Length: 275
Ligand SMILES: Nc1ncnc2c1ncn2[C@@H]1O[C@H](COP(=O)(O)OP(=O)(O)OP(=O)(O)O)[C@@H](O)[C@H]1O
Ligand SMILES: [Mg+2]
Image (cartoon, rainbow, N blue to C red):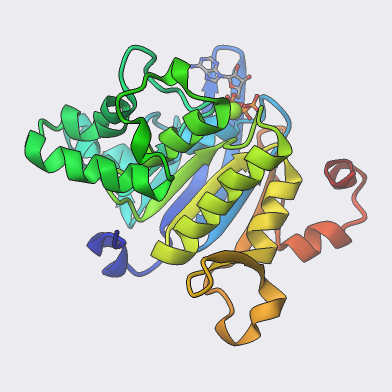
C-alpha cells in the first residue's frame, strides 16, 4: 500500500484551517479556528464532549462546510469545490467514524468495499483491494460476517480497513478507542502507528484519552522487528513523524503544542486532562 501520489507531489500543509467558523441555531461551536497539519504529522485533537472535535474532522473531510474561513486539504480549498469534485477528492481522506459506524446489514467485505462500490468500480478489482485492507487489520477471515457477529474491537478494525480502501495519504480518526477496553485500545493504537510509520499517513485524531496521544507521540512501529518500540530506544532510525496536541475549548483552540509542553503546563484547565 503506497501513499498516494498527491501527497508526494504536494508541498505545504496537508490540512489547513484558516479562521474557520461553524455554528448552528444555538450558536457557534467553532468560532475562529486556525491550525495546520503538516505531511506525516499526527495532530491529537483533545476536548471535552461537545467542543467540536467531530465537527472539525467533518470539516476536514469536506462532509460539512464552514460558515466562514477556509479549510484546505492538500492545497485545495474544500469550500470552493462542488459536491461532485468533493466526492472524488474524498479518496484522499480516510475517515474512521466515531463508534465505527458500520452498516449493520452489510457484510464486512461490503462495508470495506463501500467507497469503491459507490464509485461503481470494477467488481474484479474490488475484491483484492478489500482483502488487502482487511489483511492490514488482520481480519481477512471475516469477509462474510456481519458487524453484529464481531467484537467491538474487531468492528473498529473493520472501520479502519474501510477508511484505508482508497489508500488515502490522510486519515481522520474520530475517537478510535472510545468504549474499548485497555488491551483492545492498544491494538487499535498499534494499527494507527503501523499505518503512520509504514505508509507515512498524516493523521488528525480526536480523542478523550490522553494516553492515546502520548502513545502516538512516544512510540513508533518498527518495520524490521514488526513491533511497536519506544522512540528513544531507536535513536538512529527515529520516526519521521511528529505528534502535536491541540485542545479545543469554548469554540477556540485553547492549547497547541508538543506533548512535553502539555505535560509541563501549569494551566489548571489543561492539568485536568493530565490526571
Ligand atoms: N448538525 C448539527 N446541528 C446542530 N448542532 C450540531 C450538529 N452537529 C453538531 N452539533 C453540535 O455541535 C457540538 C459539537 O459537536 P461534536 O460532535 O463536534 O462534539 P465532539 O467534540 O465530537 O464531542 P464528543 O466528544 O462527545 O464526540 C455539539 O453541541 C453538537 O450538539
Ligand atoms: Mg465526537
